[in-house]
Image (tube, rainbow, N blue to C red; front, side):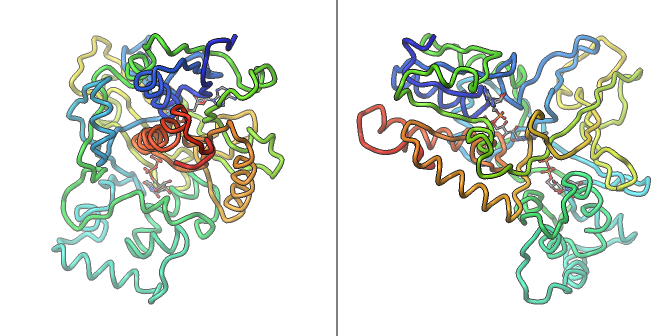
Length: 390
Ligand code: FAD
Ligand code: UDP
């Protein structure tokens, strides 16, 4: 089956597809891409919902944003982008507030008009319990950013539902993803480049993989073919790292999401794409109404599709979505990395392969970097290990 392939890429998500495209286009090498799912695109996969005609993000809502010009320019080869700018809201005790936390959220929450300076000093006072200590976990980081009252309203309950892990055990980076602003700018992301792909995410992957030197086989699990691979064939693996090593160093903590899709008998269910629910008494974390990601499209159906997200710990048979990354996880991960370094033909990449909370632009950026620093030299016959991190 692999007679002519010069490299095997496991996983047709952004990391695998970017590397496949670069290796085929720039180096003229034959690439075999496999995915155990029946479609390309990994977790960014989208398709048209047959009932409403809306583009649905099967594995949860995906918003493209980056400040990395190289990644942005690279993607222009495969898609244009709409002018969509993401805004989100949070429902807390039956009231709706804008997210991320900005001057409008602060004024509304405290029920008074505050200038940026007044809001800053109010939050500084409410964050003062940390003293001079620099925050060492999610809870401390959140309090340092927004003070305890806003933390308890908008972050504590949501994070408890999303992670089911003591926020004092979670890394600070999770919350550092969200901006906090002392202006009325309500955009969710700060990045220079933002938008949704004109024809959806899957169309990007179709173009990336449409190269004569790339063969894509779907419904193929790497572990079913591993034993029959030609000796020495380089392998890029973008599945979960603990699964690759058959969990020999222990299981890493992952979260997965169950999305309850429902067609609602109204053209507009919530007036926005994403509504978060901060109260712990509401069992889901957020509701996505997919049609709002594409306000430029018109739909004939008078109905709309929504998805409610329920987060839980992933078991082995589940799709792992989010690395939990507690201190214990970090130790286990280090042991797997040491094992990977001993495998000369193996390159681990992507969100699951490197156990990192990567956004799409970061997965693409990491693949572009790996292409330059690892794969170009490798195929030009320069010594160096494939396992060297990009
Ligand atoms: P994946 O897309 O996960 O691809 C890995 C592929 O490997 C999968 O298709 C899998 O089936 C395949 N695979 C695994 N094991 C095997 C095996 N044994 N054999 C064969 N194939 C295998 N990013 C953003 O930038 N913006 C967002 O708004 C955003 N929202 C997100 C929301 C959710 C709910 C989730 C889960 C992620 C979100 N992301 C978002 C992150 C985004 O999904 C990732 O950055 C991106 O998918 C990473 O690409 P990847 O190639 O590393 O991994
Ligand atoms: N978060 C929160 N309240 C919210 C939104 C986010 O507490 O209303 C926290 C939560 O811990 C979450 C993290 O911020 O995991 C990152 O949020 P983001 O929206 O980036 O999550 P993702 O898109 O990865 O699901």
